Length: 368
Image 1 (cartoon, rainbow, N blue to C red):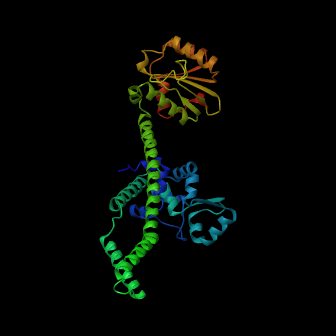
Image 2 (tube, helix red, strand yellow):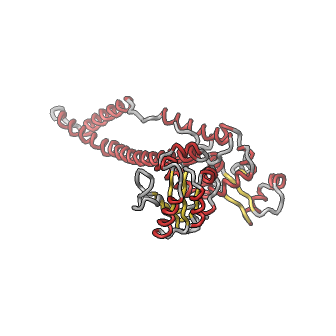
């Protein structure tokens, strides 16, 4: 069964259950405005037992998706009309003279439930959604052909053949051959009008099912990667347990998290050498567009990062790749001389202390 946390990461999965707004009332009664359609930010926050600020931040991050599900912000004449139509509510709940008012439909509130992390109510809604979806699929694995349908079709064919024979007044002597012809015509008619369209629908459904399976498989791979990366975030023990390739991929994820773009990771079992020099593990651009070169070293690569390691990387990064930002990231410790050489040659030494802070969510300033 899919875990409720998957809805937080997968927009495809959220879209597949976006119509199931009954889940909101199954978990907790949702109060609506007098128009019977909308909910304000304050009402959404009260329903999920979080602050209005938390709801506002979520709207900023996912405005496009929420707008597609009915969220909107009223301003100007639209706001004045809404206030007039809901005068008693607005006068009691909100001060006069505000510039805008955010409104959510039930579908938009359900969308919030599938995005809001720090809410027990939202988690219960997500769990209910996935439990219901699982139960629906278990109850309807397919639509087997009912024997009664087959018998009805045979009975209809018999009646059709008998009626045609009676209408055409076929002599008894010639009846056998004519019955065969009428039966063939009737069967062709049924096949053409009923069976062929059904087969076409089945083929279309099969193609759609294969497409959805492919999408779900890709989504599953992505979700596994997200879970793995989130599991490593904040844990130095997890980083120490990684091999060179895993460590390089995690560092790439940290760079992307801080806004780096066009990042390409070197191939190779060691996590380095993919560019033919043995020193550049990934290339890309910092958040502000500066050229970025990264070298990754794990504790398995050697006891310490020495001044010679730093000089070799600095030469490749600055001379060959013309790096604006040279990042030497290591779970292994740096020697004192290595840190001094890094400072002299404008290499950012991401030592264990800095790596731990970066891994726990701190932004690496040099990345912009």
